[in-house]
Amino acid sequence: MKALLVYLVSLLAGTTLLTSATDPTETAKRKKHFNLEKNVALEGYDPVAYFTQHKAMKGNPAHQFTYEGVIYQFSSPAHLEAFKQNPGKYEPQYGGWCAYAMGDSGEKVEVDPETFKVKDGKLYLFYNKYFNNTLTKWNKDETSLQKKADLNWPKLYI
Image (cartoon, rainbow, N blue to C red; front, side, top):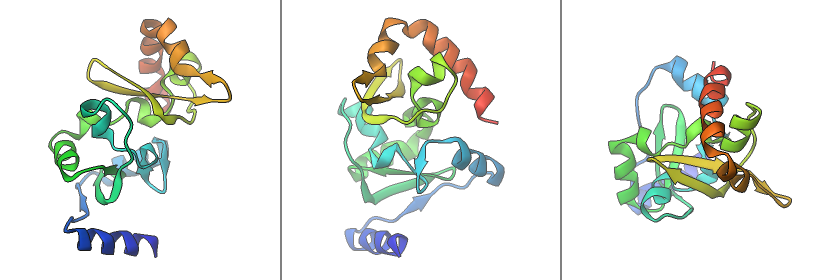
């Protein structure tokens, strides 16, 4: 029912819900390993806004795009178009799981989508609850943690 409502809202807004074609095996793998809620990445935050606005902005279900089985929502049609042109540029590292936890222990840990860092053209997300902001810890040993996270993620993404 919710999907029908989103579709109707998108029709009324004049925006089509677009999707990209992909290998079914890769789609299943992404759905299994990415940090998703009802197949939506980033808790509905706009991935392009992190890069262009330098802040976390909620996306709008009327402006969404399914890329290889993962739904992304955007705050504007312009952001949706930018993503469609180069999805890999805007997708979060480590499937949207906490970068610090991926580097520290190789675990998938939830994130606060408003706690992030864009570095060298890549988006990193972090856990930030109960007086535990892992972005602060990441910044203290970023080089080492990033190398470890880059090695740990492929071990989990199988």
